[in-house]
Amino acid sequence: MSCIFCRIVAGEIPAEVVARDAGAVAFLDVQPLADGHVLVVPRTHVARLEEMATADAEALFRTVVRLVGPVRRALGAEATTVGVNDGAASGQTVPHVHVHIVPRWSGDGAGTIHTIFPRRTRRPLAEVAAAIRTALG
Image (tube, rainbow, N blue to C red; front, side, top):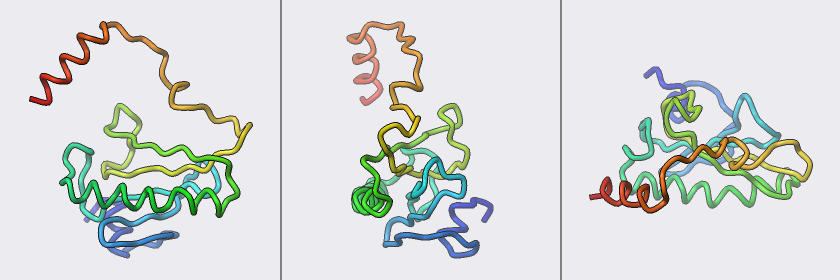
């Protein structure tokens, strides 16, 4: 097993695990963006969100919802940013689905999700919506 997150889930390598349940494991990021930066990973190895079984996705996000408040309170944070990088082009460096929970404070210097995109839309909203509906089948 070469996936570092699978090895953490299996207990093969050490991690600061903060929660573990039937569907997911949560542990501190070793390269945190802020104190209390937690990664929540499904126990099942899957690289992309769309590859997840519905039950695994539900279990993963149940764990995320369960942790957001306690992480914020434990660090005395005012808010959290919760995010998923899905695929290499988005910045995903470990090809195992994972959700970031990052505690936030006013004036912490970090931006919102809106600050990472240069707003280069090219297609009308109706055209984009139609393409998505078509892809859904």
